[in-house]
Amino acid sequence: MAKPAWTDVLWLVLGRVGLLGASVASLHLSTHHLGPVEVGRMQVVLALIGLVALLLAGTGQFFQRHAAAWLMQGSLKDNLQRYVAWLGVTALAAALLAALLPQRWLPVPGGWLALLLAGQLFVATLQQTLLHLLNLSSLRLAYVLLGNAVAWGGLALAAAWTASGDGQAVHWLLGLMAAQALALAPAWWLLARPLWRQAQMARSAPAFDTPAVLRFALPVAAASALYWLQRTLPLPWLAHSDGLATLGHFSVGFTLGMLGMLAFDTLFREAYGPRYDRAIARADHPGRVSAWEQYAAACLPAAIAAALCLVAAGPALLAALASPAFSGAAEFVAWGAACQFMLSWQSLVQLKAASIQDNRMLVLPQAAGAVATLAVIALPWPLPAAERAALALLVGPALTTLLSAWRLHQRHAGCWPWRRMAWAAAAAAPALGTALLPTSLLVLALLACFGALLQWVLARRWLLSAEAA
Image (tube, rainbow, N blue to C red; front, top):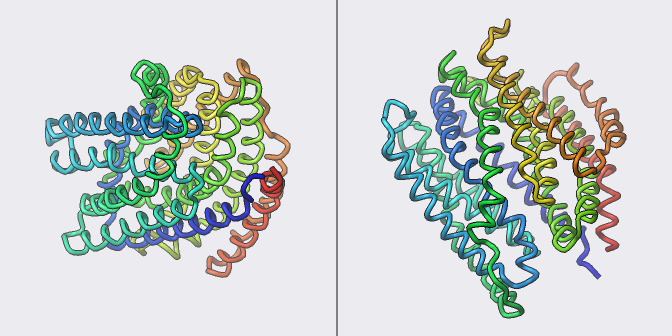
């Protein structure tokens, strides 16, 4: 009999609440320690780092895609060691390249950028991978506690370092990275026993080899570069058009909307993801399609309900969390929630492509989305620059998602849960009525209770099936 799902879900919910609390505290503290200009500068730095990280993301997807199968067959330890070596080489190469770039191109000194880039590619990626393996190995309590320790520890280091200096964005980012580095040793130690036990049970040839990784990762790299154009290019464009202060205001509201949806999306993947990984580890093509359909039927309706509740709560959340200097950013919370919903939907499409080993299907839709994003920011529109940036950030992912879903459906079948999505939207729509009420903590509490009840109704079916499995 399988381990009951309720205990695991409870730990994941508590852990996600802790991480959401850290994100909320981060928004509050960063807007108080960093002014709008430094917040805007941090967004430009993250955009540059994100481009390199996305180009190399295919190897990480390859590792996570096969981790469950490697764990079953006993070769996870060997493949993890190869992956760590790969991360070290790519991080060093990227850092050297960043240090050689002309300073006039960079928002911060080249040495700091090189350090942040290397930290993102090696430290942050490895830390996230080890946490994923803890979750996959059913070490849920360790996964939750260590993840929260990284989040809260990073926040404490970032706030202390920034407060002791002159309020620079680079200090904030280095504080976050330091906490991730400190978490590597305990995460590796916690995984040592299950990895060694599996290695003693069965040995097989490592699957993390260059030809296999390149076949998987090159289409992902092409799609990721196009994704970066959609997701990030409007931010430096906005800084160039209206200045770093405008970008700082915009990014706080937009990020708050994305943050709420990302918290939901991550919690859902943590709770449902191991079940999906096990379902496809040894399944044939029809079995993988069926497993993905069950995932989509559970995820998308719940995501729609979460997005509508977040849109309703956005103005009150911003007033409660951000510094008064960012009070004009409330209108961008809904834009951020809508954008992250489309990205969550897009991740489902990418998950299906990865499960059937057909990432090439993603490239042309990503190209169409990138063209749409460029059109919004390049062509004359009767909109202020901030609204144009928000529209560009939404149009690209939306077009990419719809085209990818259509192409995958044409070639590999699979049904979308349209009826359940419509039902979820109708059930969550009353939450938007709170916009007529004054923003207050009471409104937030009512929306939180309503949203939690609705999520319970939507998740009850698959939770009960997991309990009975």
